[in-house]
Image 1 (cartoon, one colour):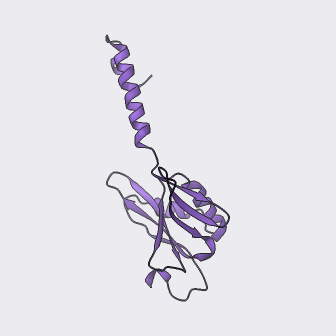
Image 2: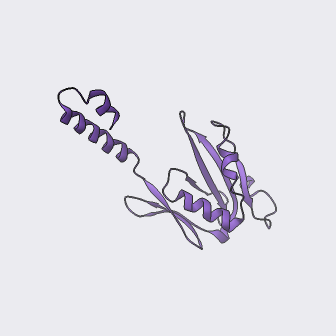
Image 3: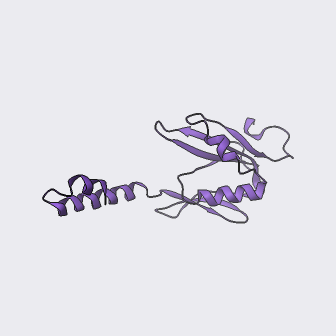
Length: 149
């Protein structure tokens, strides 16, 4: 039984309450639709636009020189983000976040590919509402911090 049905269920017009409840459910599902999603493969990852299927960005694991994770304070909630720096373009950051479909697959893929301890998530997630920026991995063949270039 929904909250609306529990509150108004014994009043006349139950069908109206059910219709409102269904409408609110549709609105909630609609607001959670993805605008982009991640695809993870053996060679790398890409971010695609849900509507057009256009590639937003694509990177190869062999091009990655640094991986950072951090948290964005979104006022009432936090958003955990991951950014990749590559050899090809030091100024370009490949950014993704936990609200994108495919996030869990990306995290597992990155942990396995780069040997990252899965405990990184807790280090970034807590305490809440702090950036908690962490370097997850850096290519040992890169002399200077790539992000500083």
